[in-house]
Image (tube, rainbow, N blue to C red; front, side):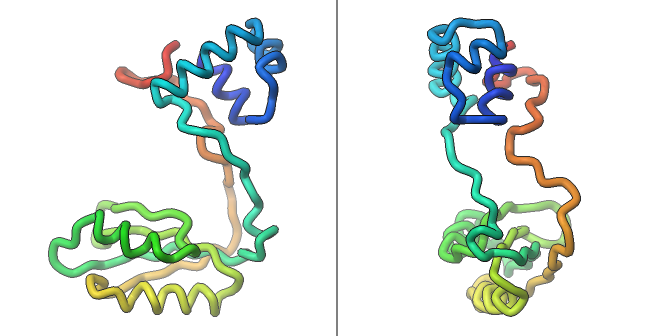
Length: 156
């Protein structure tokens, strides 16, 4: 039942508890209690608006691998790249690179300027970038609500 409620919220976070209840076969108050519990347990971390990057003029995107010197701490990487509004995602990764950045920008020149600024960070040895040509799959986070594994905060 909780997975169905989460799926309904992912589809339309502005739906009323009554609308969701109609979809999943519960009363509005029962849906509200479950949503409140899902928020408390951390299964639902918040609600937000999804804005098309193109609406903001950010029509170009790239993925940039960061190669860092020595034993650069992930927290140092996170602190540094968080200063760049163009960095919309960052993760440490396996393989040769230490981190992978997702950048959105107005055009290729803008991407280039961002990469130049990031490459100038003291801990960065080199970068390797790829410009996105077209998106093949672009699902919002949580849109494919999977079956929970042991220890999952989403009860069945």
